[in-house]
Image 1 (tube, rainbow, N blue to C red):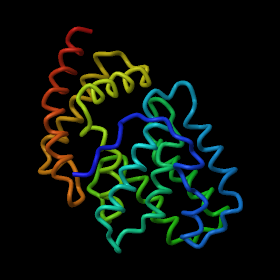
Image 2 (image 1 turned 180 degrees about the vertical axis):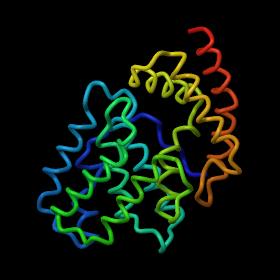
Image 3 (image 1 turned 180 degrees about the horizontal axis):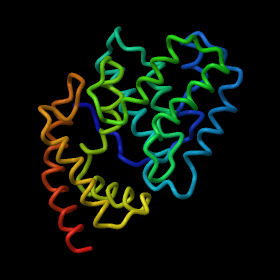
Length: 226
């Protein structure tokens, strides 16, 4: 397995997120890319974002870049997929049920303003909506997108547990309610035949299952003690 990407890392957005290049590859006009990217980066930097922030986006993008490099697949439109990753949590309202929908709408507006063809915008929107983790993705890109979003579960256990506490702090929910609900969601992942949907994810699958086998009891203990 390729070297793992750190679950939380600081990045320089203009270098790590080559928005203009992705827009160009898709046939759009990159003249506004830097300005629009800065606005998105600012949104991710809101102080209430403890988990759904720029570090999470960086992790998602780095995993996708690793996949593109190590397991190239001509069926995958990586430029559109990376744009979906960049925008997938741009709108995040604590407790809202339509964050993915609003993020997809935000992305579509930006990409239309940069004259990206509609077929690519449609893919970006679909990939963002797949991060609701409800229905199985219908496309190769969607499978990679949801796997990248869940990649943090395959990191070091201490980091996975820290992510859980960051999500709790971000949620503002009572501890018992948050831990009970999150444990239920993670249990649903464990009950799947595979947590990860794309090929060549055996190592991630094994690591995530080991982590969840420890994390779910921890969450239930935290809920009971709250």
